[in-house]
Length: 206
Image (cartoon, rainbow, N blue to C red; front, side, top):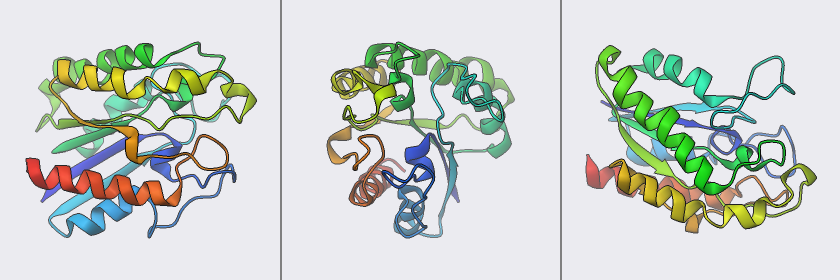
């Protein structure tokens, strides 16, 4: 059985746009749809966390820091062995408080995830997973704390694709992804399209 670990934020968790807490059910979430398409020979592990960013401490959430880099090592080691690591992070880094752009997001993913996995975690893993990097969807300036993020998010594809090529990762662009009414969270149709795109890619590379 092949094992896929999906590490991301609320768009991996499955937040319904505009609800700030509502979650798509198993018939809609891209992770669960991917599992259904791939069938019983694959295990798809959901590791989406609302508010998770790439590598920034978020003191506004004292019950669980949203710094994704802090939990990443533990997560990968917990689920080892993993055949494919699917990463989709960066949306929350475009909040005004973090002062990130798409290029800085890509550099941070390269350092705290890809390089860390291959250079530091590899010796403790049964298997070093291949990485599938997904460019987050383009954001619309609807929420005040994401003011200015719309322009920055236009470069997710370019920056993440460059990173994937440089680090020998598979890449999924965000042309199939669309944010719903809140300008941040994926529509149900986007979940379907992402699951189908990933399933097609995985079937090609297995």
